[in-house]
Length: 616
Ligand SMILES: *[C@@H]1O[C@H](CO)[C@@H](O)[C@H](O)[C@H]1NC(C)=O
Ligand SMILES: *[C@@H]1O[C@H](CO)[C@@H](O)[C@H](O)[C@H]1NC(C)=O
Ligand SMILES: *[C@@H]1O[C@H](CO)[C@@H](O)[C@H](O)[C@H]1NC(C)=O
Ligand SMILES: *[C@@H]1O[C@H](CO)[C@@H](O)[C@H](O)[C@H]1NC(C)=O
Ligand SMILES: *[C@@H]1O[C@H](CO)[C@@H](O)[C@H](O)[C@H]1NC(C)=O
Ligand SMILES: *[C@@H]1O[C@H](CO)[C@@H](O)[C@H](O)[C@H]1NC(C)=O
Image 1 (spheres, rainbow, N blue to C red):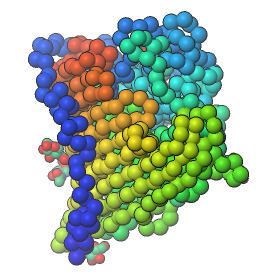
Image 2: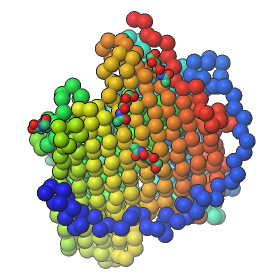
Image 3: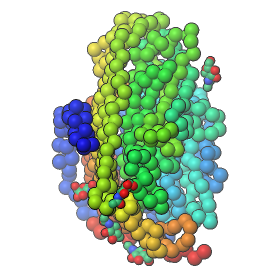
Image 4: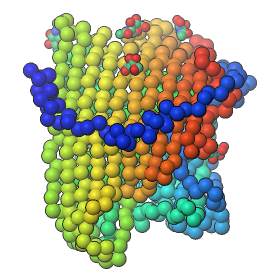
């Protein structure tokens, strides 16, 4: 009966066509099909226990920022810092001053700004979460590699052009990389961070970027502690906000990630079925569905259905060294157009609020586990006169969500299914210094998560699909479109986890397909397809268990095309701590080339991870 209900709900709500459109996918697929012939690649030994070799190059695949080709530029080192003992919840904070050198160009008139986050670590460490803020607005959410005994280096370049209003003024630059050094837990890897920014003045062919006029942080603005909100209740994080009275456009950019019992939110078990498993299996409840909401004066203004970022220690750490899951070092962000609410937010007669809230599907409050790190910023473009107007149509029906499940004879396998759908459509009439504008913001989102469990929950298969489209139009002009499809499939086997010299393993398929016209910046389409599998062997140490050996293999194809005609394609694979192959092509190849040839081990991959038994 339940599955029939699920079918009826799906028939009603699953009629969304595959997102993005076939026309948007075509250039990505054509580009990938036209790879250059592979070169013969030399390899040199590079072992995790070999002290004589160069550090392992570890990376998350990304499309490099698009910058002027033949113009000037200047690179400024913003910060060098070592995150070691005592760095937990102790960010590095430095003064930021806009660059004055002539080669940097006129402040605020840049064509592009990119940032380079380069980190070196040697030793043993968990994956740690990092974030960068400029004047208390988050500009980058990142995390760390699992280092090796011979050193690991990872470098990520991010386009931060749309934060130009922040870079134009002096401010505080904060970087959080909460690390823990604990010799008794064998955790000794510190993070040596170098953060730089490159400023590109405009050229004839590449004009100054079109950005917001001001950026308002949605963060706790603490001068010394991490600025993201730590959200662990159903209320969320509330910020008092007044927009400039002449605001003509306003967008919220959201950063969010699940942490601790929410790190694997997409594999959490619905409360209705948690009691079917023994406590010892340690399954986490509150179900796998999560929505991050943006509310204005407690009215829903838009939602984010996040892509599941898997960190480098996630599910099976050996899957992600040296090739991480997409988003590990530069997490995706999400846009909500709050322009329809401008008439409310410019009204100074009353205090207005913007709330960032996380909603899960727990049957008791809070609806999700502890905790989520969420922050954001409002990007405002202003005109010349007071903006007035009103919301003319508001439709935000309640989230449709159903949870079903059942078991096979004797409870040997248990299955669950969560299906969710969200529609939202808001229209306003604005009177601005640019004239009358009809502005609309709409979202249509679909979610399905199925899970099967065996061996009392030690073995789990989880498949999740998140697809949707977010669109904003201002007087007939499309100012935002975000069409995405994030399929994820995880098989994890912890059957032998509790045994002496036991272990665990997993196989993961994850795709990130997204066609994004951001409010400020150029259209871009991305498709990342990853397949990873690996196993970890463990010791006999009582208490906290340690990995003593591991194997892992990950391959990825990545395709990027954008509205400037630029492209970036990569076909890359790693196995057992070594690079198997790395081919890069497309117009942006030279800005983010393949790993050096000395790092390529060849088809068999590296030696894998192996550690002497801990005697303590
Ligand atoms: C990024 O910064 C690191 C550390 O300063 C540097 O070695 C590397 O060359 C830079 N990469 C790019 C592409 O600028
Ligand atoms: C927000 O405004 C209300 C009403 O003016 C005030 O009571 C509250 O303290 C403010 N909150 C913050 C975080 O400033
Ligand atoms: C299966 O689990 C359910 C829920 O815990 C329980 O009510 C039922 O008795 C179990 N069935 C068998 C055959 O163990
Ligand atoms: C991942 O994809 C491969 C290739 O399609 C398939 O053989 C494998 O079963 C999939 N694994 C999971 C866990 O989805
Ligand atoms: C889980 O792993 C164990 C140990 O390797 C193996 O015996 C078992 O068949 C695996 N289970 C599944 C469902 O693959
Ligand atoms: C990992 O170590 C265990 C215990 O010594 C051993 O049984 C297992 O075969 C090893 N696995 C690999 C992949 O080397």
